[in-house]
Structure formats: structure tokens, C-alpha cells
Length: 125
Image 1 (tube, rainbow, N blue to C red):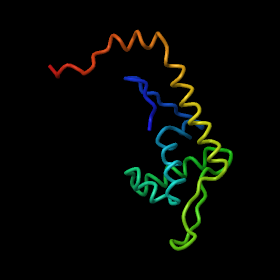
Image 2: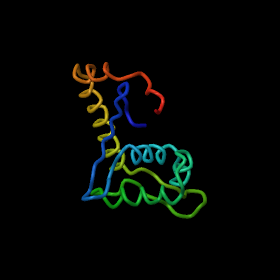
Image 3: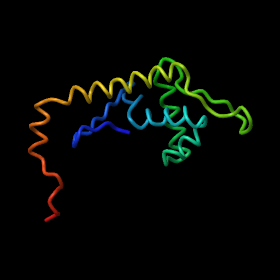
Image 4: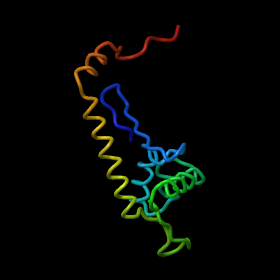
């Protein structure tokens, strides 16, 4: 879930060349893989297609110095996926960055700007 401070939505994306290596969706996917123990089950839990889920995992594994997710094929007992210790390290650092961004945005400058915002938009003209 992308952190919000009132109406401000903060979205950190880390790039490897031109490819997004980590962002809020990939971080949520890592959390889901960690809790579900399966890439496909994690995708279902997040409402993602099987193909999209696997493409995101492939992208993460190609972008970082080590794999973030390891899989065990088979479809039976002992098969599935796990977030590697390196993946947990990357995820923890990303979540810490999100918290830091949220804390940095909680300023008088933002409060002044937010005070000028309507609570809801006017109806379309």
C-alpha cells in the first residue's frame, strides 16, 4: 500500500537502468509472496494476473545484485516460492525509505499547501 499523508500520496520507485527495480507494487508482491509461499497465490491475493506476477518477479530478480525470490518447482509438497534473505533486506530498506519520505513530507510547507485544497473536487463542468 502506497503511504499517504492526508491528500499526499508518496510513491518511491528505484530504477535499474530504465527498468523499475522496486516500487510499491513490487514491495507489496514481496510481502504477499512471503506470506503466501507461492508466486501465483501472491498474485491472486493482490488481484494480479499470473503472467503479470511472474513478470514482476523476473524483473526484480534481474535488477538486484542477488535474487529476491527463489522458486521450487513441482506443484506438490515442498514446491512454491520464498523471499530470500537478500529480498527481505531489500524490502525492509524500501519500507524504511517510504517511512522516511512520509516523515520528511510532514512539514509546515505541506500543511500550508494542503490547507488550500478542497475536501472534494467540484462536479465536472
